[in-house]
Image 1 (cartoon, rainbow, N blue to C red):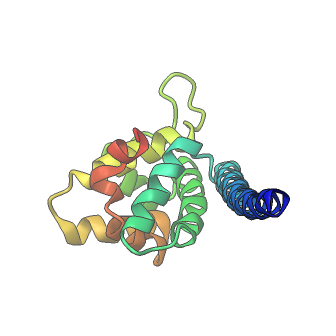
Image 2 (cartoon, rainbow, N blue to C red; image 1 turned 180 degrees about the vertical axis):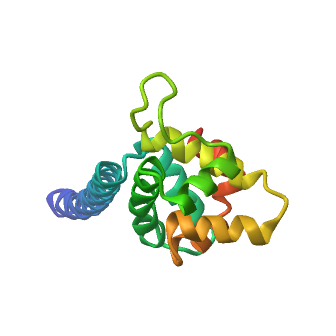
Length: 170
């Protein structure tokens, strides 16, 4: 009887240990998947930063804003790439782009040496200036010229114009 009792207890303990092992395996799998998702997100933001010249922290805030408003980050990325072209056009004397940046009181060139300022700095100044505009129609038209017909409205819809600074501080 005693050996039979011990055998049954050992079987129960074995089943319990198997359940604990399975739970641990699920937990480890979850941690690995979460780590992979974080790595993928980081890689995506680093790649976008390389293409746009905008800091990873700023892009993370934009991603948060876009996803919080039901948009995908991809709806902004093309416009952020176009933004560098808008800056360059203004620096080359494009009347349209120069006027927009002048109206926003944003310098695309360094006052010290005339070189293009960083896209990240110009973007931050531009978003702040657009966010302070009272004339929404003019703001929306300027955003579409600077960021494109898809990304301009997406940037506005995301709430980034009003909240980008707080989103990048998270």
